Image 1 (cartoon, rainbow, N blue to C red):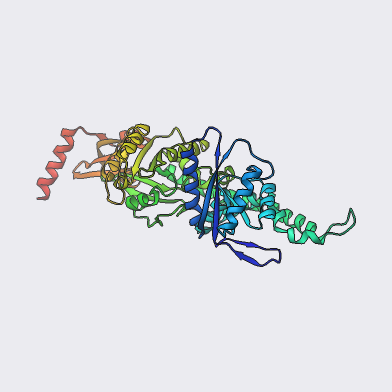
Image 2 (spheres, rainbow, N blue to C red):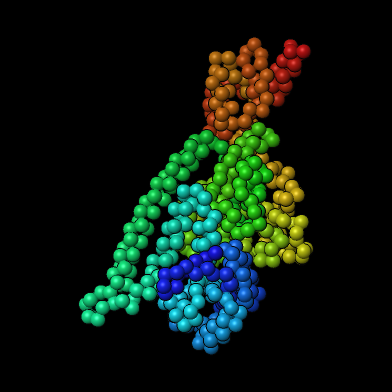
Length: 446
């Protein structure tokens, strides 16, 4: 449960939330209502009960309350009537607006950013994720520090130049937060360097890298588990995992790819969140291929696709080769909506990871992608150059070997980088020559 402090510094347990959605100029009522429904799911993920909600038409933001004075009075009245102890806005509110609302309603008032921060904080398990969450939280809270010390402001001295306990504490706290933010950025930079080193090792191995991306709760972790058996937490909740997990996937041909799961995206994800999680999200930017998982059963799937592409664009990854997986087709209730989604996502794969539908086609697409990164070759390696076979077993995919008195006949999927080494260190065979050696070996061994 989210905690706040009252004027006596005693913790308050917040249980019931009243939600305020905002419909801006140019936005449809359906779009605004969809965001409000998503906000309800977000607040439920941090243990709130939704007491009620309202969608406000916002032509021009009010600097004092964000919404107009009339709507402010209506929201305050409804929140009190429904006994909500927290008011949650679906858009960002300024620190001043937040203070005004809390002062006049005597309730905790938060926005979408703070809700997402709370979820991130609860989901963070590794050191990297905790650092990223703390950074995002401090950047968000820095301009709001005054709210935390309102109970001390009454202790200010009477003189113009004399500083009270509240003001002194505020300045001290602000300085500590700024110092902590600086330290966190350095720590995350070090983590980023470690991740970059790991990425360089993967690049040197010539194994293609694949990043699974998509809107939160679309089924990315379930796909990761299906493909690689990674054991990643996969639950029907938003932001179930924050930490990228990389595993090797052996394809039926013998080739390998490295699969990485990434944090889910969400509409109106604040820019400071993207900055804080950049070392995690950039796994998508450096991948050779993206698998974009879409929850086809969600009525806002087309908006989820748009959001994902916007975030990928911010990361510079929107032009990468991409396989779109329309997941959860077993739960689709509107076939016309699915048809429209397929029109928006041409060449996509209809799938149900839960029922293993579409997985064979996905594997086949991965095989095609790998084959473009490597070349299938047949060649004869002399006995004096066995190290070439070892090299290909480590970095390529040796599909078949046959021994003869001249050496070892090999059929392998050779990374482009090693094609010249094979040509200089072995004799290239055609299908007939390779078949003859295989046949002779079978005769000899039988």
